[in-house]
Length: 285
Image (cartoon, rainbow, N blue to C red; front, side):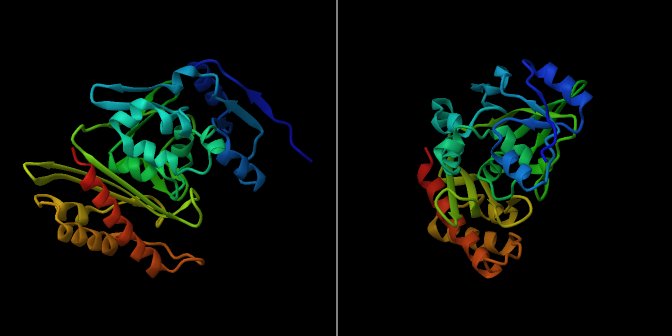
């Protein structure tokens, strides 16, 4: 027997925050792509739903003061096709294209993906590599979370509190960076077995910035700090990239999986890191 559901559809963020404060066990609905699966499996209860889709201010995509601003309700398709995103951070639109099929990309949202914190998703390694900030609101406070330091807490767990609503993501953008994104999945556009996001910058032929984030292999995305540091001050030769890729493979933790051996997945971390670094090097302006 289905339980009765109370459904709210607020017209403003303030109204939504008030409703969530009054109903702390309510489920927030944006794209409903993951929520539907969780409900079918009995993992979440849909006794009270707060549908955020009428809050138009949460759909904005813009470039402001050197940062890309993405509203929480921007869909994957919005991000994939946005000229603003393609101009200032093509790495993000490349990741968006990897998500499922067009029907799902038309419904799923970046805010929902962040809140869901699926470690095999495609946005998290991009957001961590770029050091993006997730913004949220409650009835009384505004919050900011660094994706690199504090946002992704554990397996399907983010730092967002029970009375907070994700409002936007801001991503600092460099005009001189090169980007790379690689993904290995069971099927095209399926969840990642391994995915890697990389960013490189150079000055006078020497590497001045190196970011490598690997996801799909652990409870949260992981930064390859040693590999990144090894590239700084180098000329980004093939040998430099190979050495960094090997270091990434060695330092990135890999979960046990009944379907895929640790050895294979770890080897793919090295392979995909090298491919992503080569793409980023080739993309340097």
